[in-house]
Amino acid sequence: MKERKKIFILLLILATGISWMGINNKYGKPKPVPFIVPKGWPQPVYDFSKNPLTEEGIALGRKLFYDGRLSKDGNFSCGACHQQFGAFDSYDHSLSHGYNNSLTTRNAPGLFNLAWQKEFMWDGGINHLDLQPLAPITNENEMAETIENVIAKLNADQEYRQMFKAAFGDELINTQRMGKAISQFELQLVSSNSKYDKVMRGEAAFILPEQLGYDIFKKKCVSCHAEPLFTDFSYRNTGLPVDKALNDPGRMKITGKAEDSLKFKVPSLRNVGMTFPYGHDGRFFSLMSVFEHYRKNMVVGPVTDTLLRNKLALSNFEIGQLTAFLHTLTDTAFLKDPRFAQPGYEILSKPPADIHQ
Amino acid sequence: MKKSIALTCMPTILIMMGLLLTPQTGSSQKKLSLSFHHRVGNETLVLDNSYTNILGENIVVRKFKYYLSNFSITDQSGNNHFLPVDYFLVDEADSASKNISLNVPTLEIKSINFLLGVDSIRNVSGIQTGALDPLLGMFWTWNSGYIMAKLEGTSDSSHIAGQAFTYHIGGFKGETNTNRYITLTLPQKNKPQNNIHITTDINHWFKSKSEIRIAQTPVCHTPGALAVKIADNYSTMFSVNADQ
Image 1: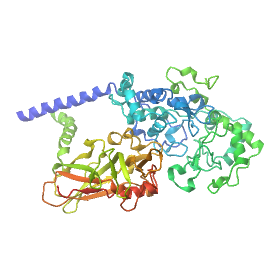
Image 2: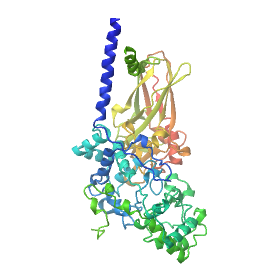
Image 3: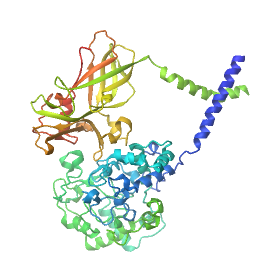
Image 4: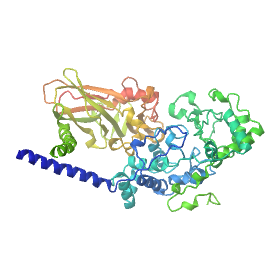
């Protein structure tokens, strides 16, 4: 009997201890942030269970996104080429500027709705959002830094050590945590409040040209630029002749297959009014030049998309209406959302007067 | 009252018992260490020294690294015992990395089996840590996937800049898969099997199932047919030292 009592008391102490530890752990735990899927949208493909969103994780990711120290000379943050006022593309730049007066070889795409994207880059070479930042960080003509150096720089900064602790529970800074934090910020970049979205939700109405444009869009564009994300994430050859200086094989670079020659990912048309220039190398400086390509300038080859074998017939009238519709995809709330701006620069989220400073 | 306390404590007790018992479940374990000895033919590999490879081309090796993972052992009755999945980067420049310590069941081991490379799951699951941290330079950031094995150096036969040869072998999808399952049968001498010495012969990169001449093929940096050919070649590079 005495033995049993002893065991009992011991167990009680144990249980109390464990519950105390449980309560104690609640303090200083990162605050969860729900990911809201816009009504009518498909479920995201990003696995949030492996990287639960938290306020602290998002704040850390935002700081990393805008920190030039991720580059070799401190000049090139992620945000340097992914500017909010251009829906996080390189505003008004065909190619982006990189370390030591270099240029990239492709047009920086806008960053939004990344939770729905399985593969990244124009050629789909990167298979996970967390991995994506490692490519520009290490690329000689982008940020030109080594991951090792970036981790060392972050480790040397007490503020980062504290922020990593707040986001992940301890001060360990490694590649995985850096990638996860940047993903947490980037996953917040959901663009779902354009006029088009409001019309779909019954909160607004298209004016006539917009409606006519939408009807034409649904006939001639939607099979690749599928709603609601305005891309089907496929890779297609749209008859773009190769640029001899860039010599970019597109998707073939990743798969090694001839049938993937000059195929590039179908870009989303959301915020298309702000993401000029267009095309994987930014060769089209206006929507008009894109339309001219599809109706006239395409070079139809053996692997050109079957939907475009006869090019894309578009009248001047149709181009006008389509343009009106495409501008309804501009999400000004997203472009000016202070949560996405560089910390401390929340009100500057509009194009500077001179884009070359 | 007492009963209800007992009931409340029950999950705690079960969890604690579980925690205490987990490591001891199953058969008993022993330590098995694998020591890798890098060679060019009969000569011990020393980085930056000059050698003549099996095809008569001279080589100076600057980097030699490869991933090993998914170890299992086969006992004398032919049963396979999978060890907890772990990843090791063996690097000639890091002598500690050439000794791998494994916890294996206390059994007479017939053969050791492992994957030379990194299984596809780890290639598609975002950023990994430890031996798989991309900062170790064994990960392609532009075409996601691990470099399973890397051999870099210079050779008079090379016609590219710096007379370099660089073989970064990777690819995990379908036909371009460069992961290779390796089985090493241990010599049966009734000796205690605690430390297995394994020779890794670089010559097999150049000549095994096919011939890779630096003069013709100084570079392999992408998944594809060439990478597969080189992986087939180096898949025979391991042998267990007979006189251990």
